[in-house]
Length: 158
Image (tube, rainbow, N blue to C red; front, side, top):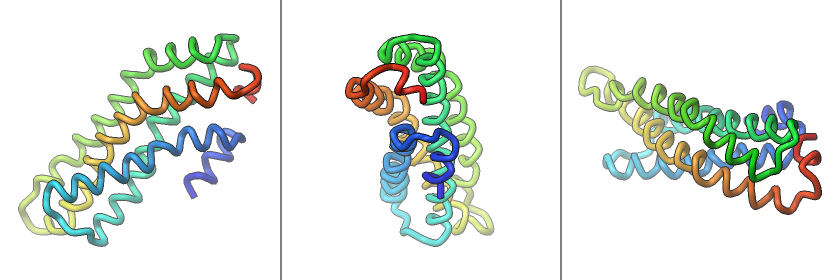
């Protein structure tokens, strides 16, 4: 469903694939966080993975939208990627930090209902950390690699 909404937004499968790269990294982070906290997979952890998918896509969307904007202004692919990475570092980090900090009380809760809240929050926090790293490191590299195979910068904007 997320991929379909991304296609409606961008209209290009390449951009959908670029934005969607954060989701597998987020899933790995969520699984690693459950493993580190010695928690089993549960229904609430599954709900956490669903929520995490949306949050993971958000940071990538911010970066890809800025890259496309820079390309439409006539910059080369490398200039657009560098400018987007620098100008969108703070928004990407703030989005991730707000979500992670917001789930921190749930992850540390020991009161009534904690057995439901902790797995969900653990998945989201772990996934946000790995997804944000992927957004800041992997996505620009992937964009540069794929952009070099495209014919013209204007083709990347369409």
